Image (cartoon, rainbow, N blue to C red; front, top):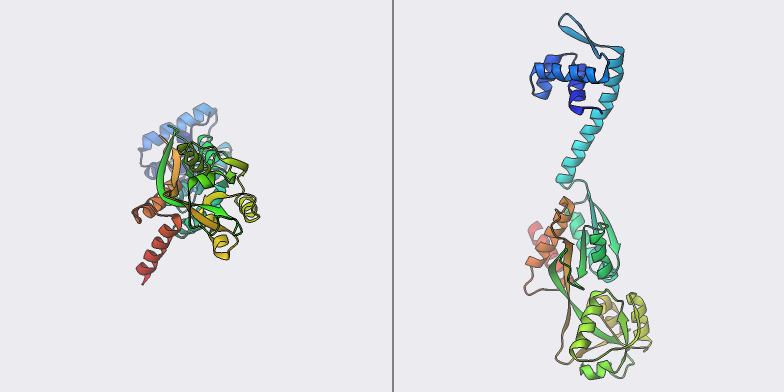
Length: 319
């Protein structure tokens, strides 16, 4: 097997045609360079240098090995540069997972903010349910995930950074659409369009019904928010979704909303990553961004409000 320390000593001696200068380049003694070269020649059973007076010359075999060594140490230099750029966040990949809802309504602002600070970092964004994205961490498909905590897992660290409001949505023609507040009993009597198993919203809704000792009248379940909104608009049933997901439809009158009397529903959004694992520089930078967002708002706020604070602060800093 090739000994790179021996090859390095050979390379510098061949480049300089001087053992003394090779020793200076490597910051080691001249006898150490000579010993490495002799060991290299002995291990290969080839002669790479011939000596004439105080000067050394490459043999034919030495010239051939030197040409390969030049290419090898060029690659080594590229690797060193790449490592330094990754440390300085001038190069790298951020692998982040999130839910379809967050990918559409929250992540663009987060990614844009991250990209402004680190324009040379490539971002791989994967989508799925919160449960799917937690599994992706365990399978090393993603390094971090922006999700709701759907279950306890001792292998995963969850760091909450925002709260998203959940709202009851219904058709504008629904008999409850004009009521500002409704009792839970009336909600439980309605056909319900449920988010898929594994979603954070599904967990909150299930917990709501469990606390009231009720079983929801599930018409269907799906992970497609647009499909849910269309069905609700048609009057097929009611649902509960993140407010940001339905804000446009509520303003346009495509959907209506009402609140549960004495009940406010929120979804805690967290940054998740594996415990006892060292985060890459890109993942640490993303974590720092979310930490910054979290620190700007107390009590916890939705991502939109947090981003607005960050952007406003940046505009003030520029003036």
